[in-house]
Image (tube, rainbow, N blue to C red; front, side, top):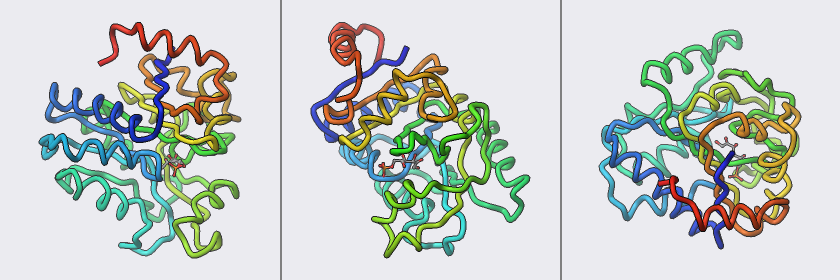
Length: 254
Ligand code: F6R
């Protein structure tokens, strides 16, 4: 079962997530991180900065990337990861990977999967969740065994991400994303959810039936999941009181 940690706000959630990353990197300076973009992980990167960890040997793999934005576009996930994570935390750019579309939809994901394998796999994958239930950009209907590939985004996801663009028409329709099967191979998943708009998607992910109709529910198939949610995002969890009790009495999550 997932360890569900309910925190007062996103700032505290970021501190908890940063603590998990710090413990990993202190134990293994060559750890491999899985990075999410979007707004949710920002408090984690903010909390990591003052810890001044040496991340120069840490490798990282981003979950996803838009297709169709010009190289260097400020909202490409390559640019976002460079700005928010690599430069801020002093990572080595050559060790930080973002998927990119190579022009062939049949093979686009294979190189990325091979690069993750060659790095020894992801030790800790940070995840956010979309209102459609997506993790990475695996929208409803994604195979629970899927690997990195090209996907179309839902209208709802494009509406949500339009805040980063002049209008929804500027939000790309396509992306390349790690699959749900790729995400499941990471040794630990840390799913972050902040704000009431995530409450329904989070409850379905943690407590609903496992279904490709709600991609986030795939986390229930993973043996080591930490869910960090603020009060608003946790508000639809049926067993919230039990999760609080279990966390107050935990003895094995670092
Ligand atoms: C981003 C990603 C997405 C986001 C999700 C939530 O790399 O894979 O799954 O985590 O869309 O986005 P925010 O955090 O902006 O609400």
